[in-house]
Amino acid sequence: MNSKTPFLDTARRVIRTEAEALGVLADGLDDRFRTAIDVLLNASGRVIVTGIGKSGHIARKIAATLASTGTPAQFVHPAEASHGDLGMVTRADVVLAISNSGEAPELANMISFSRRFDIPLIGITKAPKSALGVACDVVLQLPDLGEACGTGVVPTTSTTLTLAMGDALAVALMEHREFTAEHFREFHPGGKLGAQLARVSDLMHIGAAMPLVTEDTTMADALLEISEKGFGVVGITNEADRLVGIITDGDLRRHMSNGLLDLKAKEVMTISPRTIGPDVLAQEAVSIMNGRAGERSVTCLFVAEDNNGSTPKGLIHIHDCLRVGLG
Image 1 (cartoon, rainbow, N blue to C red):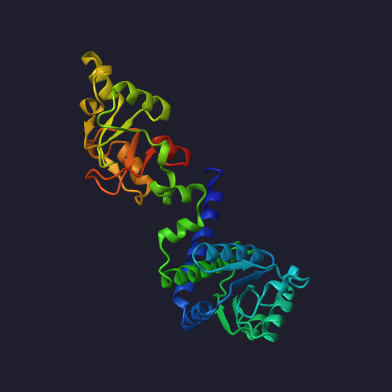
Image 2 (image 1 turned 90 degrees about the horizontal axis):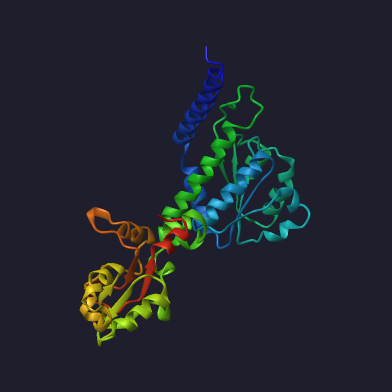
């Protein structure tokens, strides 16, 4: 027998146990969940998420998920709350307290404070008749199915269920508020998520950084513009400042034997260059520059409102996209 087989068996048992528990949780949701959503939507302040131990770790994640999906939220450690952090909680807030047993003594002061000042209290617990459950305005009950560890002492299934309940709350609130990818991008400007949701306008070069010359510019001056701006291309505009062409290294090579420096930009340019809109996702720009659908790949795109000779708004280079993790 493969010596690793028992480990795989254990892993599969844990995952299947937790997956089955999640099914029980989903099937058991009732009007209390809807009531909890109403309470959260009616709050003019923040959601104060609290818990101790493993429940505290889950509470931090739930608070972060709520905050990043349009519901202002903050984790408050219950022990710190007893030493001054209760001042963070206002009557405009809602307290979301997490305790699997419902009897965590560290939550006592938070519970008492919420009751004294009529601050709505939502509890996530498996024990609705516990100290937490009895005190709450709304109890989101977790099914009592034991832990996946097999001994019943290691928080496994219970923490998975709590996390799922928090995600369910966050996504339900998000969908009700019609929270879009654009909103999500505003809260996630950094990292891979920020890059995937970045728009062309976030990365493009604008103003004097754009390599532009007019149709009647000599190629000697056009080459200077290409060299100074460093993008390897130059855009050509007409008297109305509309983009009518582009000169790339390919255009230069094709005219090398034709007295290149004696020509005007309009005699060398490729007309009707590909452009992209400023509000398009930068990932789409990468796809175009990489040469999708059999098109020739390019290193940069001018940014314009449409492809009908609009005034150029900027220029986006493949290096700008690679720098933020796209490509």
